[in-house]
Image (cartoon, rainbow, N blue to C red):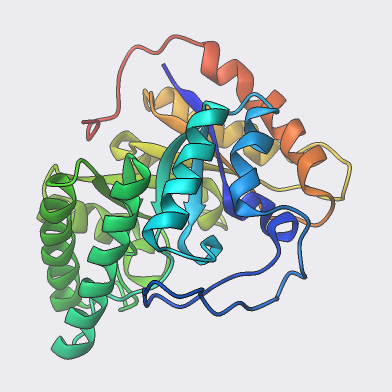
Length: 286
């Protein structure tokens, strides 16, 4: 049966600082402030989401102020105390499709270290970007598949699963994304993001990829702050149900307005889809 999760991105203004570098060491990470200083520390996020009845959490790599052993142990303790499971560590940088071998291998090495962070937290999975190349670049598709397969094997040894997403150039076209997944093998899952497609072909594209989805970024559009989500959100949810989706719906709030009130509206929209029994399961489910 589907479950409910939330991404730290949905609270990026509440969390405030970001730490965008993909590099890791034991020192405090260098902060940037594109969304202000924030009002909630990452260590306090598990309790905050649990108070709203959410017990699965995705954390973007750029929301970690530190990644040393002591900090990760504290964060894991906070997750456990709140009864919140870390679902996904979202690695929002790195190009495993790069044609430059040195650049590609450098990013692969950094991503392995983030997989280690996910394992230290007890996360189920990590999201790896398929690549920045153009979707008609056949060699890049092959490099992406190969890179995902290598990372999936590394992650599996640490009880973590690698997933990718319909995001950025290489994986935005459904046929290319499905080719990448086929080449990578069943060890790689898929996060299908409702909001990453737009235009007249949006729903056709979602129909093609949703049967492969192991998790969903349930991204809603709000026409104005305080107003209900647009009808697009329910239509996307209906497509997921029709595809037999049985994984976690991860709430993604990316609109103007206060974060928590809009997230609570999204919870009410998604709730009926959590209670409905499904006749099938996603093809790539583990």
